[in-house]
Image (cartoon, rainbow, N blue to C red; front, top):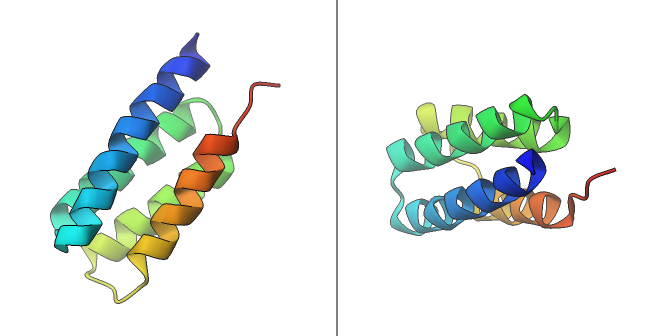
Amino acid sequence: MLFEVFKESANESLTGLKTAIEEGDMQEISNYAHSIKGSAANLRIEIARELAYEVEMAAKNSADIDYMAKYNELNEIIKNIEMI
């Protein structure tokens, strides 16, 4: 049940993250990535946590990275997560 709640919450955050990236809103990128990072950490989904942390820190520092590529990678990871 927690796993399904995570996926639902992460998908909502991913939608917001994509919009924030398209708008170039670094604060919102950081906020959405932080939310995904925390949820992933709670369930020990390290690959998602690490990537979300990377996006969060990049946005906080206004780093010049390909945020949409990171979003796509994070989206794929979350989409393909299955409960073991």
